[in-house]
Length: 324
Ligand code: NCD
Image (cartoon, rainbow, N blue to C red):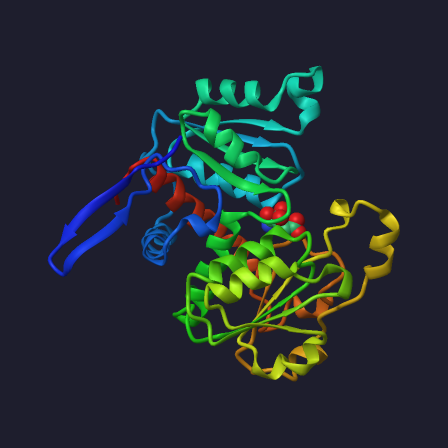
């Protein structure tokens, strides 16, 4: 469903506050910094609570995952259940009537009839927006195509805030597949809502950020710069955000072979950086981070994955209109 803007008069003048209630979550760019701050305040509260709450009692959350997922699906399911909601799921096209020829639109109509919130992952870009146009209930994009994975960006930004106290003023390096990687792109879009000191993007030549996207980001005022080698700028970095090469999205397997294993983050590299440097990764990781990094002070990706639960609890509550 499409959301409405709520105009609220504050004593400092007229401020426009967009409500989360009943809102579709398609792209991180649909949100303001103030809204993300509200989300993060909720997440701070949920992190302190253990066990099950009854904030979403009587509600049903549906998970429709037409692409593989571990963290996103499980953390959404845990978040919904911890809030007291019931969960129904479709995992993979082969397990639903899509395998019998049913189209996505009818599948969405059914999820809309049986549940109060639809969480959708799909290989096609635009699938979440399309579903949002069909469904009466809110649709949350759990990753569609190669650009948008808004809830991952929320978690990533919240992780930075948790680690550094602020998202502004830091130097970020995003290393990986900037052509097909929606988590990296959504993180970069998310940063454009903030004031990073600098954002370096580093990718193998074939997987460079698309020029039109780079232009849009520059126009949004993001201090973004492309680099060829992470070693040139590692000493400046506060956050190194790494992603895997998205093998399954390559139209030609030979192209993947050309870039496979083309970057690897080692302890050696990280030791050339600040002692406070943190490595983020949306996971799954394959071979782009040496396993010795996993147990080092630099690794923040397991914390990042854990924070998926409180951030998704916050989003589900806010979209359901629950106040805490
Ligand atoms: C990401 C995705 O699906 O885009 N996974 C996730 O949700 N944490 C990243 C990836 O698959 O590389």
